[in-house]
Length: 183
Image (cartoon, rainbow, N blue to C red; front, side, top):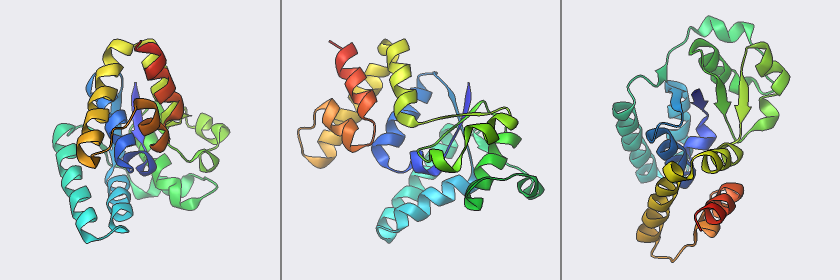
């Protein structure tokens, strides 16, 4: 399954690391556009120039790891599309152009199901999607979640629990599923 990942899933860090970790183990093929990656960098830039520089470095590594993931589209495509927030039309244009199966976004209100269905698309929230991945393939997903947890502990110096970290990362259902299924 090809899934276009919206900027609000790529930034924040923990969510991105879990989503891309699940992609790395082959549970879906990630897609994005240059504009989506730029939105991530600019969002990080609100925390300062060093944070933006770090995000831009991570974007370069992401592009190197998945060279086939970046979707290019003709700007004319945006003219025929409509969404409640015109600032999100570029996401839909990339999804249509890239022949993806779904859009993963934390912003449901601006991606109505009926409009996406007209283009042959569905949408997933990262929390529910990751929960489903854990429930269907815990042996692939648990090591991803564990690695993200270990890195969060290392970087923060805090003794996070899986559930607490995932709740903070806006992935509470996923955190509960990982704890329940890994016992």
